Image (tube, rainbow, N blue to C red):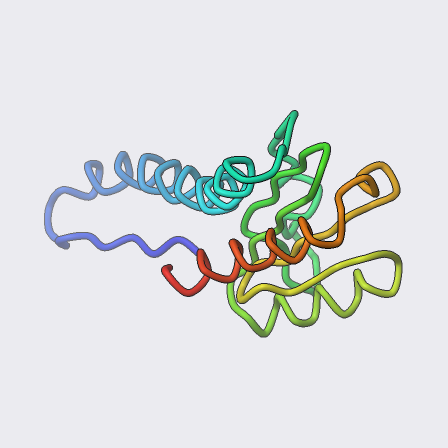
Length: 137
């Protein structure tokens, strides 16, 4: 969610010009949260080939469910950021029916068949890192 605050006044065109900049900054911050978790994970366990896959889970016009805030997929783990812990719990439950998914605060970490080489110990550590990140923000 993007919340824009304006000073209100005659500068309507200035406020309109600032809206895209504010949205871009908010989007960069959102992607940065999932990316920051991946970076922290990669500092301890290899998480190669990170790519922003947010467009595949972000809410689209007409969606009835919540979309993700950001998603970064690596060769070792996928980190999905949701708006809040309630949404993350729902996503983890739904995704857990199809594969391994673990909630860590407002993040969900998933591992698919291509990421199955990630050890159980590493997965537990990755969840701890994501939980710590969720508690900080």
